[in-house]
Image 1 (spheres, rainbow, N blue to C red):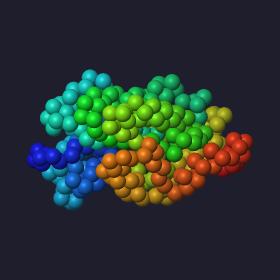
Image 2: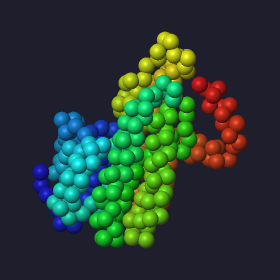
Image 3: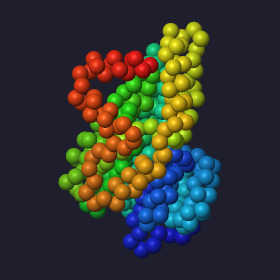
Image 4: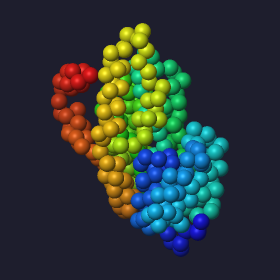
Length: 282
Protein backbone atom coordinates (compact mmCIF):
# COMPACT_ATOMS: atom_id res chain seq x y z
CA UNK A 1 0.00 0.00 0.00
CA UNK A 2 1.49 3.28 -1.12
CA UNK A 3 0.90 6.43 0.98
CA UNK A 4 -1.27 9.18 -0.51
CA UNK A 5 0.41 11.44 -3.03
CA UNK A 6 1.16 14.99 -1.99
CA UNK A 7 -2.07 17.02 -1.82
CA UNK A 8 -4.15 13.97 -2.80
CA UNK A 9 -7.62 14.42 -1.25
CA UNK A 10 -8.63 11.90 1.42
CA UNK A 11 -12.05 10.23 1.46
CA UNK A 12 -13.30 8.10 4.37
CA UNK A 13 -16.16 5.67 3.70
CA UNK A 14 -18.09 3.49 6.15
CA UNK A 15 -19.70 0.20 5.17
CA UNK A 16 -17.34 -0.33 2.24
CA UNK A 17 -17.41 -4.13 2.06
CA UNK A 18 -20.36 -4.14 -0.36
CA UNK A 19 -23.12 -2.19 -2.07
CA UNK A 20 -22.82 1.57 -2.44
CA UNK A 21 -19.82 1.70 -0.13
CA UNK A 22 -17.72 -0.67 -2.21
CA UNK A 23 -18.62 0.95 -5.52
CA UNK A 24 -18.09 4.46 -4.15
CA UNK A 25 -14.61 3.46 -2.94
CA UNK A 26 -13.68 2.45 -6.47
CA UNK A 27 -15.27 5.53 -8.06
CA UNK A 28 -13.52 8.01 -5.78
CA UNK A 29 -10.18 6.24 -6.17
CA UNK A 30 -10.59 6.55 -9.95
CA UNK A 31 -11.46 10.23 -9.47
CA UNK A 32 -8.11 10.84 -7.76
CA UNK A 33 -8.92 10.37 -4.08
CA UNK A 34 -7.02 8.29 -1.57
CA UNK A 35 -9.83 6.22 -0.07
CA UNK A 36 -9.93 4.85 3.45
CA UNK A 37 -12.53 2.11 3.07
CA UNK A 38 -13.82 0.99 6.45
CA UNK A 39 -15.94 -2.05 7.19
CA UNK A 40 -17.23 -3.89 10.26
CA UNK A 41 -15.63 -7.19 9.24
CA UNK A 42 -12.25 -6.81 7.56
CA UNK A 43 -12.45 -10.42 6.38
CA UNK A 44 -14.98 -9.18 3.82
CA UNK A 45 -12.52 -6.85 2.08
CA UNK A 46 -11.59 -9.31 -0.67
CA UNK A 47 -14.37 -8.28 -3.06
CA UNK A 48 -13.27 -4.65 -2.85
CA UNK A 49 -9.58 -5.56 -3.14
CA UNK A 50 -10.19 -7.70 -6.22
CA UNK A 51 -12.26 -5.03 -7.96
CA UNK A 52 -9.67 -2.37 -7.08
CA UNK A 53 -7.02 -4.50 -8.77
CA UNK A 54 -9.17 -4.93 -11.86
CA UNK A 55 -9.76 -1.15 -12.01
CA UNK A 56 -6.04 -0.52 -11.29
CA UNK A 57 -6.70 1.66 -8.23
CA UNK A 58 -5.49 -0.70 -5.51
CA UNK A 59 -2.72 1.71 -4.47
CA UNK A 60 -5.34 4.38 -3.72
CA UNK A 61 -7.51 2.32 -1.37
CA UNK A 62 -6.74 1.28 2.19
CA UNK A 63 -9.15 -1.10 3.92
CA UNK A 64 -9.57 -0.80 7.68
CA UNK A 65 -11.86 -2.31 10.29
CA UNK A 66 -14.53 -0.12 11.87
CA UNK A 67 -17.75 -1.07 13.60
CA UNK A 68 -19.83 2.13 13.73
CA UNK A 69 -21.70 0.85 16.78
CA UNK A 70 -18.53 0.80 18.92
CA UNK A 71 -17.61 4.23 20.28
CA UNK A 72 -14.09 3.33 21.43
CA UNK A 73 -13.30 1.83 18.03
CA UNK A 74 -14.63 4.91 16.25
CA UNK A 75 -12.50 7.26 18.34
CA UNK A 76 -9.34 5.19 17.87
CA UNK A 77 -9.77 4.66 14.13
CA UNK A 78 -10.73 8.23 13.23
CA UNK A 79 -7.92 9.67 15.35
CA UNK A 80 -5.41 7.31 13.74
CA UNK A 81 -6.55 8.14 10.22
CA UNK A 82 -6.45 11.91 10.79
CA UNK A 83 -3.03 11.71 12.44
CA UNK A 84 -1.70 9.48 9.66
CA UNK A 85 -3.03 11.43 6.68
CA UNK A 86 -3.44 14.87 8.22
CA UNK A 87 -7.08 15.32 7.28
CA UNK A 88 -10.29 13.87 5.89
CA UNK A 89 -11.65 15.91 2.99
CA UNK A 90 -14.78 13.87 2.38
CA UNK A 91 -16.65 11.67 4.85
CA UNK A 92 -19.23 9.32 3.38
CA UNK A 93 -21.55 7.78 5.96
CA UNK A 94 -22.80 4.73 4.13
CA UNK A 95 -22.92 1.94 6.74
CA UNK A 96 -26.44 0.70 7.30
CA UNK A 97 -29.05 -1.98 6.73
CA UNK A 98 -32.83 -2.24 6.44
CA UNK A 99 -34.82 -3.94 9.20
CA UNK A 100 -38.38 -4.82 8.28
CA UNK A 101 -41.57 -6.01 9.91
CA UNK A 102 -44.81 -4.64 11.29
CA UNK A 103 -44.18 -2.57 14.41
CA UNK A 104 -46.18 -4.78 16.77
CA UNK A 105 -43.94 -7.71 15.89
CA UNK A 106 -40.53 -6.02 15.75
CA UNK A 107 -38.68 -6.29 19.06
CA UNK A 108 -37.32 -3.20 20.78
CA UNK A 109 -33.90 -4.81 20.51
CA UNK A 110 -34.24 -4.87 16.72
CA UNK A 111 -35.37 -1.22 16.74
CA UNK A 112 -32.37 -0.21 18.83
CA UNK A 113 -29.96 -2.16 16.66
CA UNK A 114 -31.35 -0.42 13.58
CA UNK A 115 -30.78 3.01 15.10
CA UNK A 116 -27.36 2.11 16.53
CA UNK A 117 -26.08 1.41 13.03
CA UNK A 118 -28.10 3.70 10.77
CA UNK A 119 -28.28 6.76 13.01
CA UNK A 120 -26.16 6.80 16.17
CA UNK A 121 -23.21 5.23 14.37
CA UNK A 122 -23.45 7.88 11.67
CA UNK A 123 -23.58 10.66 14.28
CA UNK A 124 -20.64 9.20 16.21
CA UNK A 125 -18.38 8.96 13.15
CA UNK A 126 -19.38 12.45 12.02
CA UNK A 127 -18.59 13.99 15.41
CA UNK A 128 -15.01 12.74 15.13
CA UNK A 129 -14.33 14.68 11.92
CA UNK A 130 -16.16 17.89 12.77
CA UNK A 131 -13.38 19.54 14.83
CA UNK A 132 -10.83 18.94 12.07
CA UNK A 133 -13.04 20.12 9.22
CA UNK A 134 -14.11 23.16 11.24
CA UNK A 135 -10.52 24.19 11.95
CA UNK A 136 -9.56 23.70 8.29
CA UNK A 137 -12.69 25.63 7.18
CA UNK A 138 -13.23 22.93 4.60
CA UNK A 139 -14.85 19.54 4.16
CA UNK A 140 -17.82 17.60 2.84
CA UNK A 141 -19.95 15.13 4.78
CA UNK A 142 -22.18 12.92 2.63
CA UNK A 143 -24.89 10.99 4.45
CA UNK A 144 -26.58 8.11 2.64
CA UNK A 145 -30.27 8.48 3.30
CA UNK A 146 -33.10 6.97 1.24
CA UNK A 147 -36.47 7.74 -0.27
CA UNK A 148 -37.62 6.02 2.94
CA UNK A 149 -36.24 9.04 4.78
CA UNK A 150 -38.76 11.21 2.98
CA UNK A 151 -41.71 8.83 2.63
CA UNK A 152 -42.35 5.90 4.99
CA UNK A 153 -44.09 2.68 4.02
CA UNK A 154 -45.81 0.07 6.18
CA UNK A 155 -43.61 -2.80 7.29
CA UNK A 156 -40.42 -0.74 7.16
CA UNK A 157 -40.87 1.30 10.32
CA UNK A 158 -37.39 0.82 11.82
CA UNK A 159 -35.59 1.59 8.57
CA UNK A 160 -37.81 4.54 7.63
CA UNK A 161 -37.57 6.03 11.13
CA UNK A 162 -33.77 5.77 11.15
CA UNK A 163 -33.52 7.48 7.78
CA UNK A 164 -35.96 10.22 8.84
CA UNK A 165 -33.62 10.78 11.80
CA UNK A 166 -30.65 11.05 9.43
CA UNK A 167 -32.56 13.64 7.40
CA UNK A 168 -33.32 15.83 10.43
CA UNK A 169 -29.79 15.51 11.78
CA UNK A 170 -28.29 16.45 8.43
CA UNK A 171 -30.49 19.53 8.03
CA UNK A 172 -29.46 20.80 11.44
CA UNK A 173 -25.78 19.96 11.01
CA UNK A 174 -25.62 21.64 7.61
CA UNK A 175 -26.82 24.92 9.12
CA UNK A 176 -24.33 24.56 11.97
CA UNK A 177 -21.34 23.89 9.73
CA UNK A 178 -21.90 26.10 6.67
CA UNK A 179 -20.34 29.13 8.42
CA UNK A 180 -17.16 27.03 8.71
CA UNK A 181 -17.04 26.02 5.06
CA UNK A 182 -18.20 22.45 5.76
CA UNK A 183 -21.00 21.11 3.56
CA UNK A 184 -23.41 18.41 4.75
CA UNK A 185 -25.21 16.55 1.99
CA UNK A 186 -27.98 13.95 1.79
CA UNK A 187 -28.07 11.37 -1.00
CA UNK A 188 -31.61 9.94 -1.22
CA UNK A 189 -31.68 6.83 -3.41
CA UNK A 190 -34.73 4.92 -4.44
CA UNK A 191 -34.49 1.15 -4.96
CA UNK A 192 -31.23 -0.24 -6.33
CA UNK A 193 -29.63 -3.65 -6.65
CA UNK A 194 -27.51 -3.78 -3.51
CA UNK A 195 -27.29 -6.20 -0.59
CA UNK A 196 -29.04 -3.87 1.88
CA UNK A 197 -32.26 -5.89 1.85
CA UNK A 198 -30.51 -9.22 2.27
CA UNK A 199 -28.72 -7.89 5.37
CA UNK A 200 -31.79 -6.73 7.23
CA UNK A 201 -34.66 -8.87 5.99
CA UNK A 202 -33.13 -12.21 6.92
CA UNK A 203 -35.00 -12.21 10.22
CA UNK A 204 -38.25 -11.17 8.58
CA UNK A 205 -40.50 -14.22 8.70
CA UNK A 206 -44.17 -14.69 8.00
CA UNK A 207 -45.34 -16.31 11.25
CA UNK A 208 -48.38 -18.49 10.41
CA UNK A 209 -50.14 -17.24 13.55
CA UNK A 210 -49.38 -13.56 12.92
CA UNK A 211 -52.36 -11.22 12.46
CA UNK A 212 -50.22 -9.59 9.78
CA UNK A 213 -49.46 -12.85 7.96
CA UNK A 214 -50.96 -11.85 4.61
CA UNK A 215 -49.43 -8.38 4.72
CA UNK A 216 -46.03 -9.79 5.69
CA UNK A 217 -46.08 -12.19 2.79
CA UNK A 218 -47.11 -9.44 0.40
CA UNK A 219 -44.35 -7.17 1.71
CA UNK A 220 -41.75 -9.91 1.31
CA UNK A 221 -42.84 -10.45 -2.30
CA UNK A 222 -42.53 -6.71 -2.99
CA UNK A 223 -39.08 -6.53 -1.39
CA UNK A 224 -37.86 -9.58 -3.31
CA UNK A 225 -39.22 -8.14 -6.53
CA UNK A 226 -37.45 -4.85 -5.84
CA UNK A 227 -34.19 -6.66 -5.11
CA UNK A 228 -34.35 -8.40 -8.50
CA UNK A 229 -35.61 -5.54 -10.68
CA UNK A 230 -34.17 -2.41 -9.05
CA UNK A 231 -31.92 -0.01 -10.91
CA UNK A 232 -28.19 -0.10 -11.52
CA UNK A 233 -26.41 1.29 -8.43
CA UNK A 234 -23.87 3.01 -10.66
CA UNK A 235 -26.38 5.84 -11.06
CA UNK A 236 -26.08 6.56 -7.34
CA UNK A 237 -22.30 6.17 -7.39
CA UNK A 238 -21.95 8.76 -10.15
CA UNK A 239 -24.05 11.13 -8.07
CA UNK A 240 -21.93 10.60 -4.95
CA UNK A 241 -18.69 11.09 -6.88
CA UNK A 242 -19.99 14.30 -8.45
CA UNK A 243 -21.18 15.69 -5.12
CA UNK A 244 -17.87 14.82 -3.43
CA UNK A 245 -16.03 16.97 -5.97
CA UNK A 246 -18.49 19.89 -5.86
CA UNK A 247 -17.21 22.91 -3.93
CA UNK A 248 -20.75 24.08 -3.17
CA UNK A 249 -23.10 21.06 -3.08
CA UNK A 250 -26.81 21.31 -2.28
CA UNK A 251 -28.37 19.71 0.78
CA UNK A 252 -30.45 17.01 -0.94
CA UNK A 253 -29.93 14.81 -3.99
CA UNK A 254 -32.86 12.44 -4.65
CA UNK A 255 -31.85 9.84 -7.22
CA UNK A 256 -33.67 6.96 -8.87
CA UNK A 257 -36.69 6.13 -10.97
CA UNK A 258 -39.79 7.91 -9.69
CA UNK A 259 -38.10 9.24 -6.54
CA UNK A 260 -38.59 12.93 -7.29
CA UNK A 261 -42.23 12.31 -8.20
CA UNK A 262 -42.86 10.42 -4.95
CA UNK A 263 -41.48 13.33 -2.95
CA UNK A 264 -43.47 15.82 -5.01
CA UNK A 265 -46.70 13.85 -4.60
CA UNK A 266 -46.25 13.63 -0.84
CA UNK A 267 -45.69 17.38 -0.61
CA UNK A 268 -48.62 18.32 -2.85
CA UNK A 269 -51.36 15.69 -2.50
CA UNK A 270 -53.70 15.26 0.47
CA UNK A 271 -52.40 12.55 2.79
CA UNK A 272 -55.66 10.57 2.52
CA UNK A 273 -55.08 10.18 -1.22
CA UNK A 274 -51.61 8.78 -0.61
CA UNK A 275 -52.97 6.40 2.03
CA UNK A 276 -55.43 4.93 -0.47
CA UNK A 277 -52.76 4.40 -3.13
CA UNK A 278 -50.22 2.82 -0.78
CA UNK A 279 -52.65 0.56 1.05
CA UNK A 280 -54.23 -0.58 -2.20
CA UNK A 281 -50.80 -1.63 -3.50
CA UNK A 282 -50.18 -3.68 -0.35
